[in-house]
Image 1: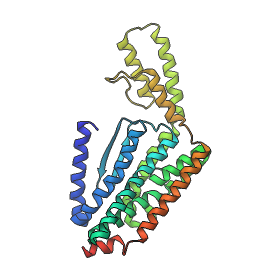
Image 2: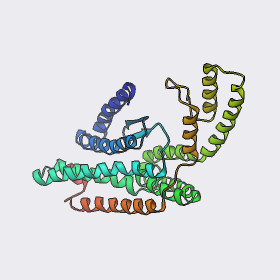
Image 3: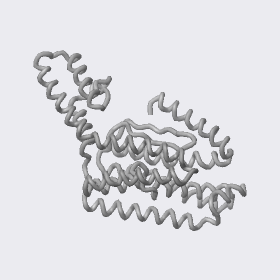
Image 4: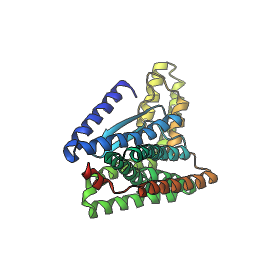
Length: 295
């Protein structure tokens, strides 16, 4: 993260402590914020492992936090690995805190383990394409057939509508996730169109270059082409090449699908991770809210 993003990140943490402290008490804030940040750091860290350089983290009080990639996923397998990294980091965090609770029996540690399990299981089992488990399922379905992947998006919208109408306590969260889901859906749906339009514009560019040989004019034309295609500026300080821009477009329009053996492997890992969380959760003596009330 650059300096500006780091400042925003720190400010979002402080604001989260303030808002959650007011809404639910400082004990809740003390438990929730580190648990959420550790989960999101798993995504952020693994984005870097997959070669995504433009990435950042921020908290969104009182809804949670996000790790945001500024580049397309390198492949559907990469998206699945990044999605699973958050719950995997969360599981190791839960196991470490569980061990401390076994040694000390401090109620706040049990409450922390319980909350870690809650937020990670919520992200894993909620069937919405932009949440962790949903991203794994989406990547698998798209790798099998694009129609299955887009049908899963429709199912996600229906699921959120039901949550909004029948579960009043999650209405605000449902609206926020619904907005993010629509943006993600529209991005994937418009990918092929953006690629076709950009290629058309770049073909015109190559013809114009025969008349204009200035690097400055070339950079401006490339910038205009990609801006019109919906990908923003490419003629930045690093002078991104035309080939890099085309690769970005191709990753958006047609990401590399999972191999058949990878589909089986990630499916089994996804199920196993859910079972691991359920087992750990079953070892706790009480649920989070009861334990929190005892502290």
